Image (cartoon, rainbow, N blue to C red; front, side):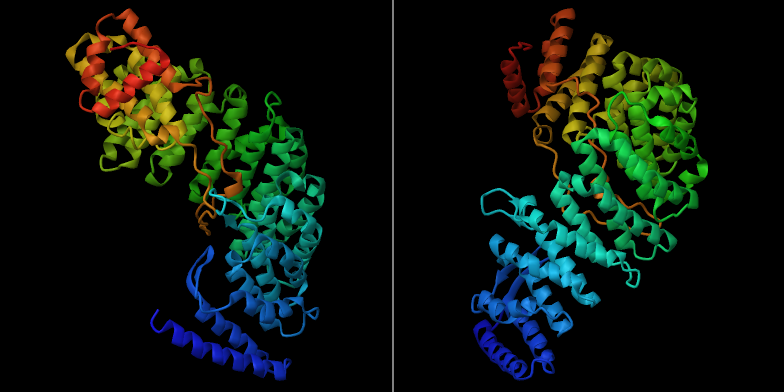
Amino acid sequence: RQFEAQTTAICSDHIKQMIAEFAADPNNKWIAKDTAISLFLGITIKKESSYGVSELNQGVNLMEFFSLQILPELQDNNPAQRPMVKATALNFVCIFRNQFTKEQLITLMPLLIAHLGSSFVVVHSLAANTIEQIERLKDSSSGTMQEKITRQDIEPFLQNLFTALFHIVDNTDLNENEYVMKCIMRTLDKIGDGVVPVKDIVFEKLSAALERVCKNPRTPGFNHNLFESIAILVKSVCSSDPSKVTEMEQMLFPPFQHILQMDILEFTPYVFQILAQLLEFRPEGTGIGEAYSSLFPPLLTASLWEKTGNVPGLTRLIQAYLKRAAADLVAAGHLTPMLGIFQKLNASKATESSAFDLLSSIIQYVPQDVMQQYLLTVFQIIMTTMQNRRKSNLYPIRTAQFLALFNGLYGGQTFVNVLNQISPGVYMTLLGQVWLPKLQGASSSKVLAKTQVIGLTRFLCDFPKLLEDDNGKQVSAQVILGIVTVLASPTFTKEAKDLPEETPMVYDATFSQLRYAVKIPDDPFSNVNDPVEFFLTSLGTLNTSHPGLLSPIIQQGLSSDPKLATSFQTMCQAKGVNLL
């Protein structure tokens, strides 16, 4: 800033004059105070983002101004008096939330909750927004990022907070308020399974709101936060006690069936996601029940899949069915229609991601003896699409991810046998031109990286004929290089990142991901605890059956990168294996 000191001094004088003007006639000169607060914001804030103010003008006493001018407005028990100044005062607290200590924020909480009772929309909206922003504050003063306001800090205020928030939601004279529903969502997330004792009343309130908005879905932000709140309720209740899943299903099925029967386009993607969430929480061995069984056939209706916004949620729901009851779906004759859906989704770039999600679950959960007759057709579809999308970068990556999963589950020999039916030796082309070149892009998470290691290892070790000619040895060297590259990469060792604080929401006809109903990460090779040991043990077995062949291949593969060669030797030493 230019001339900061001089500007601060001049503006401070104007602020004092306006505050004095207000003090002389508070009821009629409230605009003077409102303007003074706005001017104070202008000279105080030096850096600000969506997370609040990060740098202040050191020539201004923020806390003194708050104590003298803002706090009295928040403490005023007359909600009808100077509502615009109260709104500005609430916004002041929200803007400078990072500058308040934890103790100050907890002290302010009853005052903020009191303003939820205001009949003025701007006041109770800003009160809800301020509380929500405070609840999501982070504190890094201890060296690690932690919640500034914890569940224990919020619990003493829960009854009054929920009462005030739901009083606004229940008021049919008001439009749906997305700030209020977002505050409900954030509070439910904050208290976690602390909601269990009051889940019935919370669900009753959310269900009533859902029934109203079904008649006229006019406020996308409110609707999204409403379904997020339901997803949090499901997650909190069912994760703490899986036996409660049936109870939650009984609560949610009636309104959800109404939405599906009425074909409310704005809400069906949300319903599919939460139904999948409920299904995933079902305890092992309990089956899927009559309600889910009767719901499944209509999910395969072609018209549902024509609507792009439905596809990710529907795919997620079908995946949940496969995880819980693949054998039952096969027995009921649903496998062929599901593979037909895969083919349909695969035909469009817009839905190819969902196509591979669905196919991966089919490969993972449908019994292998049942799938054998379909494998040739599946690979023909993938190979044809690959030819038609030569300029695509994502399709080869998704194919590489699928190839790793397939080889890890079915083995390298089955992979080669199926591909040879299309064209003898085409598996080498697929390996050399698609799988290995896209290995890095296909290993973008810890689970995906683990899958690549296991898939490539099984391809190499289940198909020893690869070692019989020079071309095969060269490809084997590249496979070993690829596996060691993945094992030595940061992706393989780092933990999965937390979800971003806010997931961008896209409304209208497109899909809106529910942050709190996100698919539970599924490790298809959970039986392999140590991928490094799996890789080295498999190589050791191959080395024993083909003595003298493997060592020069390993050296050839790692000769181009001394660091990887060192990493490989370190792995071998750690596991007590000698392969060189």
